[in-house]
Length: 465
Image: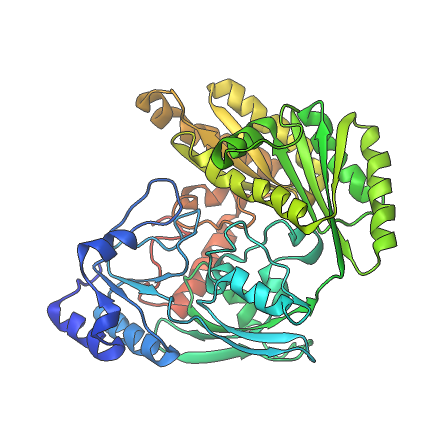
């Protein structure tokens, strides 16, 4: 049982963060009750916007003493309900943690507060020839701290990895209010357990990250994009593993079905090449030697011929490349706008993608439910969107969970798992036992209890109550 927010607690919160940063009005309560997860909404009792780790520490000490749940909020772009205040309490918004504190171009490091928008961080680095590759679709609005919480990946994870591959250290506040810096600014570090890596992907359940030390890279000098159209979905997805087997390592390799592209066209109000083809691959290549990129393009062209590719478009100019990326980045919102939906985040070893897609199509036929799949084929990560369309509420409510369960069971049978980058959060927690053993879940719960004995930080997530 959790405590309730009282006028006295509101007064304490105002003393900590200031009257202008504590909100109880209906407009703010409603705004912070939802994110990008379907149509879910849970009302918090109060929204607080602290500006320092010390303020967060005081808020958590207050909440822990009074058994009040606290939900850390980033940019509100989550897709698994990971930040939703399912038990009311305090939403703690990180909006004021918006500073890039340091860019060390000689050691290829940057120190960033958790509320910095990912794209802002990337663009500041690019001004001085540096590169942060993690590239979620919501990069224009998502916060770096949210990326850490979900261990975000995005299209370039196929070549460059995910968020945890770039974290050297971080500052976080425990649910008891302790402020801890963990990790270091060295490239090698095996001094004790890696708490920084444990925090990454913990979905805001273990601590509130306030500051991150990232390693960054040199910005590649050259970049080119291919858009390859295919006669069939099967041939398209089957060519992915063969492209890698040819020795090419794209910086991104994205899979789009015709339905996904048509949805994006409707969303953007413009046409895209070969949109009547059954499926397409968007392949980005980057590096410091243009001749090597051109050789890779020829290798890809030769490879996809064997899979009946019907057209290959090469984009070399920045404007054209940005146009093609706009198509890809718009797909998620476009598909969701069609109807009520459920979005799943399956991931398998890359060579298993054809089998994953076959299983998804069988579930679609079995339940007569439309499914649009697209995503990061380069790392085996498909986003599976299950659409209600004209189905009755009764049929949808009766069958959609069974369909999701079968998709997840099939995914795990292929050596995959049920979330690649969206997290388990609120929406997927009932399916966690499909992917993890009882022993793994119990050990994870014990870790949570060690960090948060009163279960006040983001309760109701990851594990079923």
